[in-house]
Length: 203
Ligand SMILES: O=C(CO)COP(=O)(O)O
Ligand SMILES: [Zn+2]
Image 1 (cartoon, helix red, strand yellow):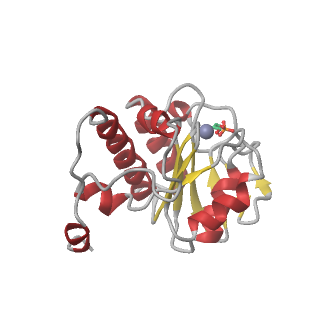
Image 2: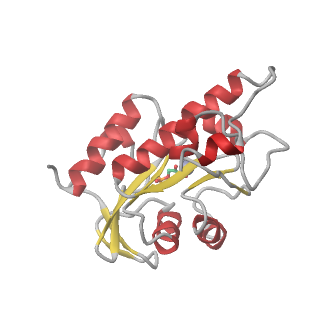
């Protein structure tokens, strides 16, 4: 069993090497007591040093370590909105970002319930309006949305999701990425999503 800092570094490398985010995009955090450890700003998730993480309070205040991710305020919003959240993952996964750039999406729930695993892992997916990366104006909007959804899609940007721990939060974003890919593959064909009865039988 590795400590939480090593888990952040290992997950970052795994996501990066599987091309679920690229360059110096994305950020990961895990709750520790009444604060959270988060990847520093401007680094690659492929190269996170476990002893160089930033500590941030649930109010979004930088407590220790290097300058935190510019999205630390969004992670803080998730932890405040969801007491059950132990970790938050934000990525620039290609197919999810592609969907986030589409016009005419339903902002209450972006994707149809195509598969059982999408329903079980992601569920409802609200779309948040575009803000520049790091714009704190998105904080209150994300906090409100995160009270009723553990995954959000940031318009023209990418997904962010919470889970009980790092593996669960990553699972949500990975399932979302694969479903976004399916949805783009199916775009020109008639689609038969799961029925309300089929969805009810999963819960
Ligand atoms: O994905 C990112 C911004 O949205 C990456 O920013 P940071 O390097 O500050 O974490
Ligand atoms: Zn981002």
